Length: 313
Image (cartoon, rainbow, N blue to C red; front, side, top):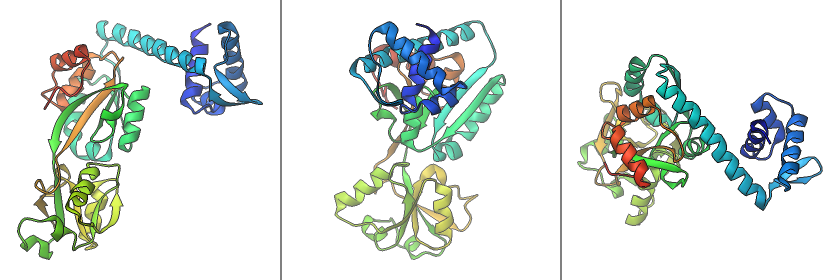
């Protein structure tokens, strides 16, 4: 048994039992991976993967146990390297942050700038995706930190921390009659075509639930994954927009006006997450605190030690 074999079975499982994809990811050959997996199975005296001909079709029950242990072993090896680098005082390293478009576009630029000024030797990589992808990448270890409003707190393998709360705003092109109607209502919004986020993004669930509880059918004619697209179509007069408040800038968004919607839709919480078994480096803690100043290293370590999430905003 060797580490190479462990990495092979781990990557094959991660790639949905596609040995070709695993071989490409590990820069090796498909026959080489298949051979090493069979050698490992022979040494363990069990079958990890069920097969149909040369194709892997499923993970066996003992295989699931093996894969869980392998994941922990490889995670601990990664943590050992991190500890060494951290305490050796090395100024370099890589920080992978998975997040959504809204966070990357509106919440993170100032944080990234300050982080890069403090840690010029650290390579920062942003991975953008939908909330479910962000959660998956973080739990899988492809990202060190995940930042999103949805999905992160549903993953048992992650420690999640609340960063900040925010509300939605209603946006309309200048001159739209709703701007003269005072505080918007759900019934008032339902009279117009609405443009908002895709169902899996940026607090959309709170928007849907508000209309459902009121027994009002919203006329959502267009959805998008980011606020810039929504604002573009609102500017064209195709409907009213509902976006995150952080995505509206009066100075930049000429031709659009915003109305507060705190009373219409429940507030949303943006969270940051990392694997429960991950060793956090000094610059991991620094990035977390830059993004959410209340999440000091002491708060994060206390949360980890207590084994609970969401210490409160």
